[in-house]
Image (spheres, rainbow, N blue to C red):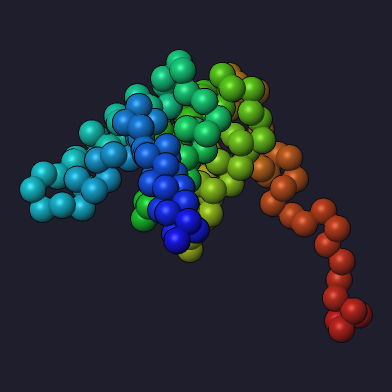
Length: 154
């Protein structure tokens, strides 16, 4: 009996402590996007993410959450969203996150990577130069470091 009571109390405490805060939720209107009542335009969507990434009090968890949400959506982020995210990474001094975000944008291009990714890099190049961030290709991350020919093809 005591075990059941303790289990229910810890479950209730965990639920109340881990309740989402509205200040950190960037995708709070994602459910609104999917609903039939109101539609968010592409410009409003872009501005929402640009405003979120431009917040001065953004922390590491929030920026990773927003980037993860963008990676989970069926879209390639606009260059202005990418630039805002890169500036947020720079404010947090997180070079690795900036490079990983560029890699995720490249991955989101899918089969059209040869047309979409060069356009994205061309558009964000001034921001990359301004912030001193290299692309994964400049760092050599597009090729495996220890690529060895297969022993079966020697």
